[in-house]
Image (cartoon, rainbow, N blue to C red):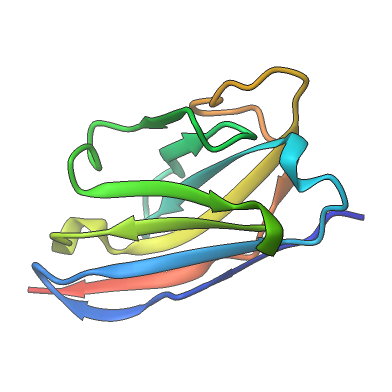
Length: 125
């Protein structure tokens, strides 16, 4: 059973930064591609970014390019989403996701097999 736990959400002023973490209970973490998604109230879930199993390849939605950075720490079974220059429109519940893959490619948009419970990010103006 794969479990993903997101942490690091909170309240931040516009222009500030947050780092979200997603820790996975995966024995073979290195063979999982992972991604971040978010869902704001009244809106559909949207893709934020993706990272390949090696961490060498990343992909970002236009909304986060230049501001968001994904990374992985294999020994810690953890993926990070560093968010800088946050805007009020970044306010949402952020979810991490994972899928086993045989190729070292980021998987923008999915499909993903496993999902975390989400962490709230609120950016005040």
